[in-house]
Image 1 (spheres, rainbow, N blue to C red):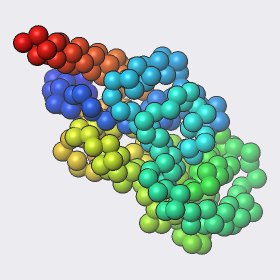
Image 2: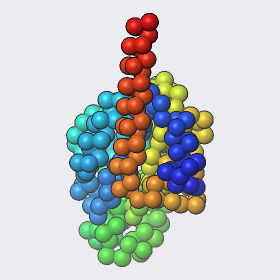
Image 3: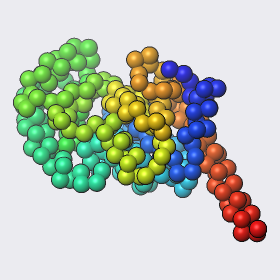
Image 4: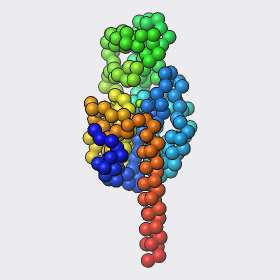
Length: 265
Ligand SMILES: [Mg+2]
């Protein structure tokens, strides 16, 4: 795994960042800082302004574990593609495909509630089509993690449980994931190249899709990650957005110049 702004990374950026490149971002820990309570997450203004500029130059997507309603209220603008619940909301026909998951999640909440430790720092985020179980602010996060892992193993029907940062993502088995969602976004956008930037275990499904036109970037290095490159810190997303905007602006100006030359010929 190499730094994105290394010689090899810049070469790869040159190949991928071209007019029409699809730019897809995870939200928490990628565009926004991780915060103790999920409700407090916000998009920093420096990131918001740049995303807005980028969306004028290239198709932008946000692919998050949050529900669509939740993520909409935090972005402050509507990207070209907005996909929630790890891919269960926002893709074409999602309502038909995900309808059955509502009852499953409702049943899980009923099973989980009486089994959770008596600790306000341990709570369920019910996202209707999937759940998140948070324990970042638990009195004893290590103990809470072990307790929750044991409880999750008893769910009926069984769930796909993915570790997050002081949380468990709980999804219906066989449901879509960020990898399948990203493949679908690339397909429906018609883009030949794409970037995906994420920071967590659920993003690994997207890093792994193996599309030749995809550049995958992880926030913070991790030797176990399938991402090709990394940004050392989340704040470096600003540097990447500046690079994309600058590069795509140059291409746009070049394109207009070419047209003018053709018109004048
Ligand atoms: Mg994240």
